Image 1: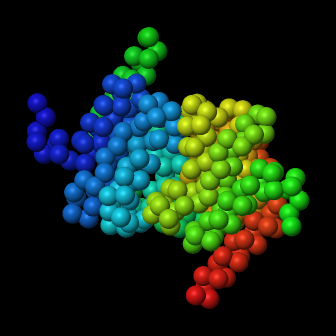
Image 2 (image 1 turned 180 degrees about the vertical axis):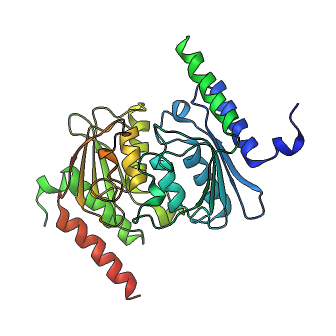
Length: 155
Length: 155
């Protein structure tokens, strides 16, 4: 049984979104946007397969939902939790949306663009850098991904 | 008067989209996706202000429209024309969508991510690199942007 405090944390919610994605055949990544008070404003799972849209990463969907929900183009006081290190598309979207803090789970040496690859927030051309905290519930996020790809390989 | 051949070229169509964006108060950038036969599959303008969505760049909207139109998650035989060098979000989306060739107009030393900043397609972590052709109708694309920002500064 998972303690209540854990299931209601933003990263636990993001992990639940990721689990839902896996069950539906999408790579298990989930994202949540919370406001300055820590209330969940938007939550989304990766939907690339289901929507047939290569841009439908969890972070993109959560950011778009949050801007609609708050009626604001810039999410200045909001934080984003995501189970996997964002790719360049999502990392740049996080910057464009002026997200205050980014919390991510598993590192992604192949596709990540925050601590790997282009390391977008370290570039002089980056206009807005969120504070970044990696490795949050990393083991669970990584295990979800490992299990998903292991199952697909054995299909 | 614009010659017929010019108005029907993909970049002319993208420039027309950009002009429409400026009239509506959005930064004038336009994008067009064409299929292997050169037929326009999707055309979009930047809609960040109008949609209140920081991810509503012209390239993102055109890619999403094209995947819906073709019922395909990957636009493997498609080319994308855009009036401005793509930012990191759009450049990565172009890679994720498996776009074959990217034609862009004005270079963007501050926000571009193809020939400037992270130069995403030059990184070892980039899984799919489109062929890139910059400077297409560059003067017109740049002039549109200059005029737009000059007008706003004098407001």
